[in-house]
Amino acid sequence: MKRVNVAVGVIINKQQQILLAMRHAHLHQGNKWEFPGGKVENDETVSEALIRELKEEVGLNVNSTISFMDISHNYPDKQVFLQIHLVTDFSGLAIGLEGQQIRWVDKADLCQYEFPAANLPILEKLLNQS
Image (cartoon, rainbow, N blue to C red; front, side):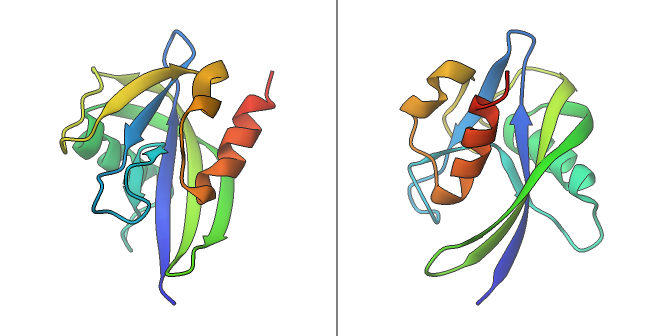
């Protein structure tokens, strides 16, 4: 089974809101909300991949990222290894450059959104932080 290495960004703005993006319907785990990010290429660090993906997907210029947690999750049809980083040092206005719906959400409201199963430990860790 193929293992996909993914850099994931928990992007937090000055109002302490977190950026979510809707997965396109035709994608694996489509029509669910996720923390933006994308695949790590062979020649990239996680931080480099995340900075590139966030520029391509949501138009943010990220200056630095901080490692938050790693998750290995097996779906019936694929394995994902998520390397999650916190992003608070960025500029630009977030827009869905790939036609995806995006929105800033208060941490307390995150549980109202449907996420892929692999993302649930991220939610748990965020909601249990003070």
